[in-house]
Image 1 (cartoon, one colour):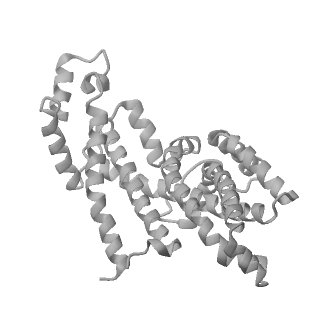
Image 2 (image 1 turned 30 degrees about the vertical axis):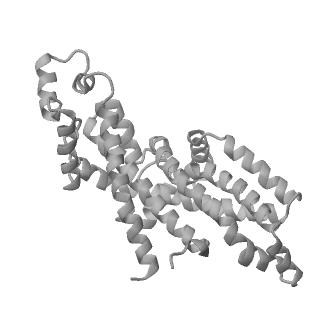
Image 3 (image 1 turned 45 degrees about the horizontal axis):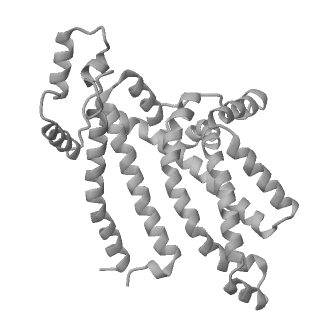
Length: 317
């Protein structure tokens, strides 16, 4: 078996107990909190009969371990339950909204990496020049801007003043990719600006550290051009902490998408999170917690594989 395939299989097997632990956590977060979930969902003016019916429907009369076992068996079969608010299947609701959220987060990630890493490299390569000062100032300003405020400013500038992009709205990227992307450019920029600024700072500091290493000085002493030294010798080692930060921030982007989807009226998973919390829709909340946890674990797997690509010492033999 090829070493890289063996590494992937090892990581996948290691994910199983992690996913079981995450499923326990997501189940316990909803069921162990004080108060009767059925009464909380129906409100204080509900009748005892309605509360009893909902408790029976949710299986709240059963012992907690038995409730978890039945819920886990449903999850394994791909059944996340039914929404108490609009009676749709949670899995179908997620499958319908997921492409929009993944496209939004993917676009924000591409924006962050495309802006942050080159800006950090330039800032380090031209240290203490006007390029460095300008990059550091823009980074400081970008880190201070709330994403929802930035989203509103982008709407005013690019939609109302310049009339370049639609104000709000949605077109499924699954039916018209480029038409759908037009609706996601402004939300993606608003969501990815903070991470772009963070990557600029991190790339600058990481590059400065690597550029001071002996092997980089040796490469320069051999007469190699600065561009070759930066791209071939310094950037690869500098990317290791950057990959870690990107992996961690994917979860933050998923959480931040709830606010951005609300501002831009996008029918994504984030908007579903807000609506489900407002309506106390227990099955949907459980499904959403599990969805975020699974994506986060998958991102960590990708980060692990990138580590092995960037650092040959971590590759299996």
